[in-house]
Image (cartoon, rainbow, N blue to C red; front, side, top):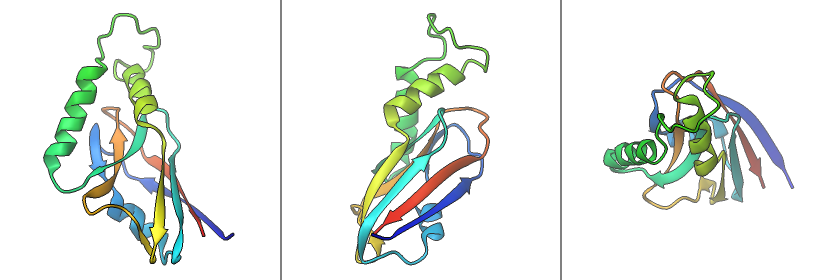
Length: 137
């Protein structure tokens, strides 16, 4: 097996779901004929997701649904020192997840026609996000 691993930095983004497929692919270089990409975000208030890449309404709807699902004003939150969006961001991150595994086939990510990689940003004022990309072939 051959491994290649890099860490990339995604500049701060507004709260919401952001397609970052092209940004990730631009850092990968030549991909093997067969293998796996594992992407892992090193944060507890953001996540990674694979979802539709064509209609921007999907990004809007995902963001609004998850905000309604996990409101900032939930009265039983105890972890509130880092602001009202912090504890909800931790819960959202746990639900969405911090990693993706995507097959590599024919030197390309083997995603469906309408699939894209999302950075799911759950803080209103987030910093730079760090993602580790590992190619296994």
